[in-house]
Amino acid sequence: MSLTFLHTADWQIGKPFARIEDEQKRAIARQERVRVIERLGQVAQDKEARFMVVAGDVFDSPTPDKGTVSAACAAIGQLGLPVYVIPGNHDHGGPGSLWGQAFFLQEQRALAPNLHVLLKAEPVELEDVVLLPCPLLRQHDASDTTAWIRGLDLSVWQNKPRLIIAHGSVQDFGPGGDEEEAGDAANRLDLARLPLAELDYVALGDWHGMKKVSPAGPCAAWYSGTPEPDRFPRGEGNLPGNVLAVTVERGTPAQVLPISTARLTWHDVEFHLTDDAAVKRLEDLLPTLVQGRTGQDLLRLTLQGSLGISAWGELERVLETWRSRLLRLRLHSRVGIDPSEDEIAGLLTRADAPLAARVASRLLEESQSPEATVAERARQSLLILHAALTRSSGGQ
Image (tube, rainbow, N blue to C red; front, side, top):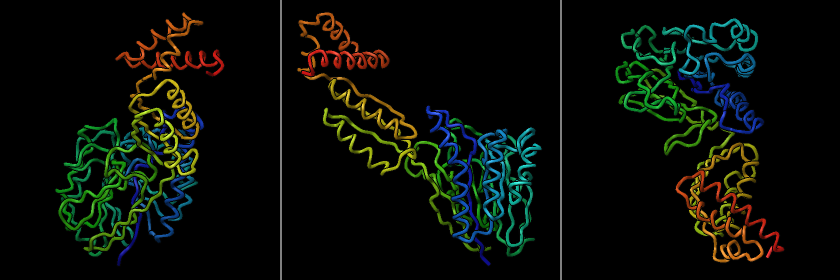
């Protein structure tokens, strides 16, 4: 008989999102790490899932604060189905981690009796399936946590599907899900050495995008990715923001259905400012990205080109508006200042303000400096000076 379950990972509840400067907006991003659990529950109900597996990193830290623990347990307790969790590299199960602490155990019993934390590398036989957990008991493990399965006699479970739950990077796939851990040789998994013909599904965590990584053979191996994206896109093929509804039957290829669960949207836009009118084109483009949402989008915006002084002022106004509307605007600006002849004349030929003309000349020179901080300071000063001179001449 076939059965359906949900495969998810990398919730990282408690992630600080320190690069979001506004405290209230940072709190929104943090709350979505918990609120997505409710959306997972709706998927489980819609797909009639029997249980859920979380392939590591429920929490962002092995020692989350008590409020984070309580919120996570309360959300998990509302799911209405068993949830089987292994520790990952962020919330590893080593000495002193939360999994054995009295407060977590209290909240688990009171709020999430359906939560089962699998801390041992040993089979867990359920009514219709066998789970083969590969927990991380330290943040960086030089050994392959799936190695214990290689010599296991799987035939004793006859027709029950066999599911591996593991957290790490597969061989020949590259570094794990965290940018700060890129290149780390620890937590590597060699799936090709497993008895794949006797297995039915490998539920992986660590890579934050959804990806199928099956080696040759009938057994499907997938990274589910994080159900709520937590970073800007990292190239084509990286698809965070999903949960996998997996239907398995012993000896039959698993059916894997990705289902979107994301609420926040992380955009990556490059825009070339070819002339002063391009600022208006940028202003028209940004609403098409957010589609009427406020406080749900984050944008990494890379700008190139050059603008006149007045257009620079307009650009600053547009960016300030979107800093307010977005959860975060991460700006990479390579925009130079290229005043028009009229703007240069207005700055340098003011007979009524000779000192301002000398300052403007110096600022124009510094605005072309190869030192980014010097050029940016000069551009901002030019904007202020240009605005002041425009006001003093009655806007002419």
